[in-house]
Length: 183
Length: 455
Image (cartoon, rainbow over all chains, first blue to last red; front, top):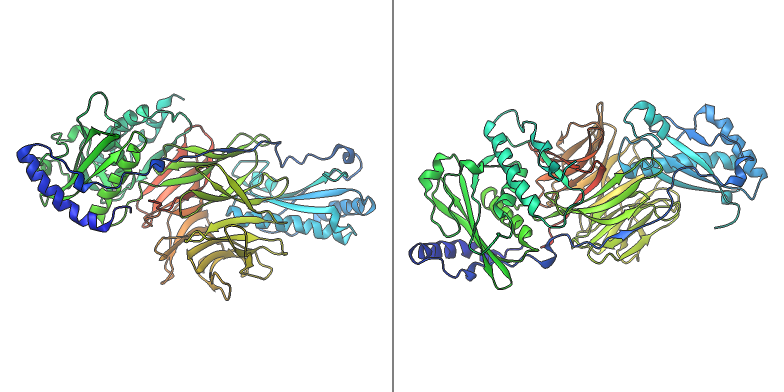
């Protein structure tokens, strides 16, 4: 605390003494027992910063790619794992073949988790999921320069309900085809 | 909802299964709070409402008498109401109903102890405010009713801007004089609020007084914000932002000036910043070298050093002191807590209960670590004693997370779910006091961080 120890001990006696005096002679000057005044910034002085921009996490594909690349672009995962489910191996392989042939095409793999567990650990789990898909693409001969990954952990759910159905929809990797022109 | 929503909902339900007097105290307290709220200028934005869902079984009865005012016109706030609300919120005190106060002594009066004993109060707080050159002088005295003695008393120079802080300081003085522990009423909390739907979310990093008032937005963004961390000076706050297109970055922002620096935006994950107690370094989690590991660097961004290695997930570092870190690692198969020297070296495992223990927060004296514990019923906040390893579960939710110790080590603020939306909770270290904090505009609250002592 901000009250110096020596003041803390001496004040009660001073206050008692002046209380006695005060009782006899009316309220007196008590500046001897003053505490430091609260700092002027005692309240939360805050200068806000505002960021603008379009929303993320909506899997907005580059329109030119939409017709050509494989259409299934969401890979789902079981709880607490980044292992690719058997039913998605073929879809990922299709993307891999497309990217291996279309070397100007690039994808962004966004990893997500459901809300259970801590946020930073879920960022890590989301990254593992995105990397699982990335490794699978590279096995198909995709150049690593065509693939980038980002994890949003549990921050961008598609379904905010707190049940198994919602959680299953949120445990995913979104495959997003990015513009072929460098940003 | 009308502006007075902040007083009605929390007190519609009984506070505790026992103690009718506690409910009555809360009702009159909320009337006093209403007066205080309505007086406050310029705080029309979303307010955190605090409901005490469970108070300590042995809450100390205390009479908090409205302060005297010897000036003209209105007093600069109802200081006694702020003090009583603080004391009640701690769960350790039960302020008397205003209508049960037998008399209205003010600063300088000698109490009639026999009268006060009849009210059941163990302690009596009186005070007064008078105009002074650059504002006011506020004085208070705290009396022990049973011992019939003066315990402590001080005077403050205050202005209109600092009168609330002075009231919180008085509550701290009363708390410490009676319990022998520092109070944490004159402190702040940071948290993230999220409003809107999928595709149209708005994130805000906000700061508020520990009593939920004066919330102010530090950062407003359409992109996720997480892991706010206070610097020891209470001015610099680190956080993770996804505003960079398709990557996370760690920023440190000066909350007063609004200036900020992007400290790290490497490839991969940039996460979990934590200031060292001396404020000179940050511990972070980075994955740019291939796996997520703990790094330490100077706050200006220099001297980046990796502390952990291996292919496991290592994240969520916090400092026990300037040379020791505790962090989360899943090297054993699932997340557990480990302790390591901040210079690197062999880590020792701290948690062994269950297969999910993560997101540590350390008490200021280093004795206790609170964290998120996964169990059959979901996720709760638990704590272990660092020396004995004794484990206890503190909360009963299913999605509890993000624990943060108060700077006096008595309470843990955390994130929980309430009525289907994100809310904050606070629990005492022995689990006896439980509070719930929600934003009155319906948005979700998460990621709380309790400020350090800065004054």
